[in-house]
Length: 87
Image (cartoon, rainbow, N blue to C red; front, top):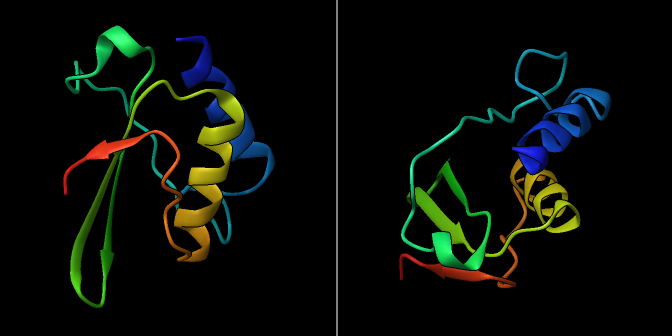
């Protein structure tokens, strides 16, 4: 829950949250994504020219979550750090 709150605060202050001018990131809670024993998990879904892209990440900390959010917002490649699926 602390990571979730910290990430929301970051998204808002960096104007990345979807409801901010220029923002595009929507953050929502989820049930277990299959890696709960490794710590916080984060799942990214975004539409690309090739179709729907998914990236699932385990043992996520705040710096990694902030980098993922920025990559999604910028349309950049998702980092491989902590990625566990889907292939």
